[in-house]
Image (cartoon, rainbow, N blue to C red; front, side):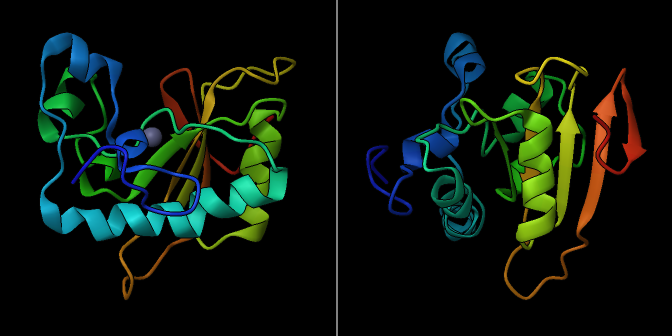
Length: 156
Ligand SMILES: [Zn+2]
């Protein structure tokens, strides 16, 4: 699949698989073909609604991660990024806390995690959001990750 090919109206295949680390380390971050429909689902069910709500173009920080890339960056062992079920995002001009709350209150998702957010610094950290394959049960779990530990709920 061509990197410029659109997975949804505003998001390309390349944006969902790009990784500075993969490029720097020469890691091939191309997903297996059968994961592409899941990336499409992430675009349509998570990214497009966020894009529509805020009306601001943004590029996901991290979508799919090959197992090799995930290991390199020290990602969680069972990371949903490796299953093409998760994406890390920030939206310019929107606090990451507010973004995580909007997702929790408005979208169907498996997990939303406010990661490495520092109170009083709206642009600190990022929002991790995941969605399982169609047919699977999504847990709608909201968590905050900071100082290397997870806490329940979204904590500003
Ligand atoms: Zn993530």
